[in-house]
Length: 290
Image (tube, rainbow, N blue to C red; front, side, top):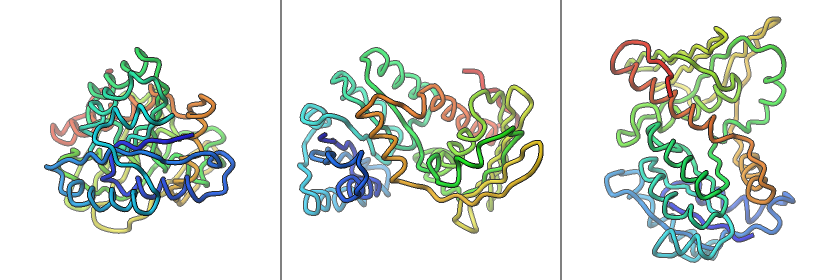
């Protein structure tokens, strides 16, 4: 299977390609990244400062053909990874390739608004394009055990780096939000967010009255983790992201049509973060009306 990458301004382009080319996992045995469109966002310093270096390394270290358009990448490959660091460009990039009806994975952040996220999903449905987005936090090895049982709530913590072009919560907050929804599932009704110079606190209330929180750490430890609350116990679980497990899930979509994160849940995650942004700025609870 030939994989194409759209967007070489993220470290994930190199990391994912290395795993797909070098891992002994059976799902990766016939997978090769063969073509890429570099992309890059001139007004996003982290993007523009890295894209040329990453593109050169992709060509030199892995023999990836660099192409001038996303469409040419889609034409020449079997499936597509949209890895652009800038969530603002994902809708336009997906629009450019969805008509080829090849499966697509969109890296975090899927989008920066509910409107863009809804449009991506609508296009996927219109063109019958298999679609998935997920954070590698969803595939941490500690999670399968801790998500069993009667879950009353969860408190997630992790770094909250902020990039001005990506809003306050979408750049790193999406990792914690994906972890929150991985545990709690869909059905969040309202969101309240507070922010200081040191940290952020986001509280979501689910339709059954269950509550989940995110503590975003702006200054302090860089680790992720959670405290899981069930009827019988509270358990603390440190979390390590797993690129390999994420890519196994992506390849299962590409090869077998099995999607482990339905686009409707991805849409709810984006709406959750959008509501958190609104709540933080307006200093009041925001309702999760879609």
